[in-house]
Length: 229
Image (cartoon, rainbow, N blue to C red; front, side):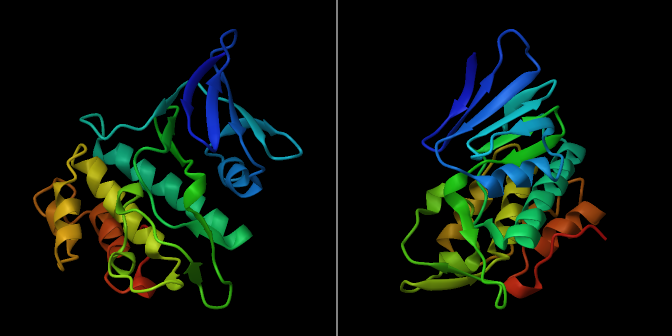
């Protein structure tokens, strides 16, 4: 067995005898994350244990995501579609979401499907209000944060579940810029949240994908969306 990745919550292992067979071993039971990967078909040919601590799947290739020159616009658009689908499933079926995204906990499956695996960022959404309740501080370095999280006051704190959409938009910009996060660092330091302007000289400008990212990065959380039009 070859270990491809591990953290305190899970590890990904490739079978040495069958290179197309992989397993994700979770420290704790995690039906929400497992179903978000299986039911959306981000991972295929899957089986999982009754206690939701083991997920086995088949793939031609599994690698950790890297924001580099291989991040073509079509590839990053696939990232938007698959991570957006994972978010939608978690919300619709479990009333959960991710608080945000980072680039360190994403795997790329068969070169064009993306899965986010940061267990620590899974958050419960209040069904009627669409709000997430936070009780303790977090580190800006853990994920791309939305304006409402950047300018939080005291705890407990309520934020709209679409904070994840803004974070996704930042992640997509980061990928399209081949890992250059200077736009995000500038955003953290200042008051200007118009991150989409960084793509005004990019080849995707005025395309459907450009407007998809733009809708992720809307200032008012409730007005954000992750729909291709």
